[in-house]
Length: 192
Ligand SMILES: Cc1cc2nc3c(=O)[nH]c(=O)nc-3n(C[C@H](O)[C@H](O)[C@H](O)COP(=O)(O)O)c2cc1C
Image (tube, rainbow, N blue to C red; front, side):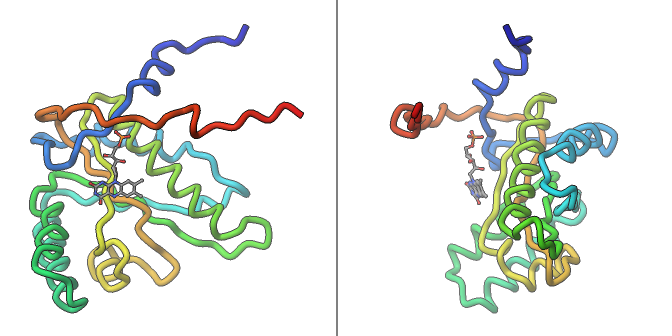
C-alpha cells in the first residue's frame, strides 16, 4: 500500500480560494511569506529552465498600481466599469505576489510548457498560502495582459508576462462553496 499523507490529501480535497474582496488585514510579513514562496518555487519545470520569478506587491505599492491601472484603462478605451473593476483589486489589496512567466528560448521545452510551469507555480503559491492558514485568491484582470502596465508597474521585460496575481491576507467572511466539476463527465478511462 502507498504511504498515505492524510492531512495533505484532506487539504487538497477541501481546499478553496477566498475571494480577494473578502480578505482583511493583516497580510503576511516577509518572514511569513518566505516559506510560502519557497513551496511555490518547488514546482514542476521541464528542463530546469525556471521560467518564472516573483514580484511581491506590498501595500505601499498598491495605490501607484491602482492609478496606473486607471491610466492604462483610459488609454485602452476601457469602460468606466472595467476601469473601476481593474483598479479595485489594487485599491483593496493588502499584499499580492505577481508570478511572472519568464520565457527562455529552448529547443527542448516549448513555450507553452513554460507557461504551464508558471501556472503550476501560481497554484502551488495559492495552496501554500491556504495551507498556511491565510486567505488567498488568484486574480488576473485586463491590466495584467497590458504590456505597458506590466513594464511600468512591475518592471517586466518584453519576454515576461504576468501569470497571476496571488492576493494573500487574513480570511474574512467565507462565501458559500462553489459547485465543483462533475468528475465523471470530465474523465475518460482508457484500458486498451
Ligand atoms: C489564470 C486565472 C485567472 C483568474 N482571474 C480571476 C479574476 O481576475 N477575477 C476573479 O474573480 N477570479 C479569477 N480567477 C478565478 C479564481 O482565482 C478561482 O479560480 C475561483 O475563485 C475558485 O477557486 P478555488 O477553486 O481555489 O476555490 C482566475 C483563475 C485563474 C486560473
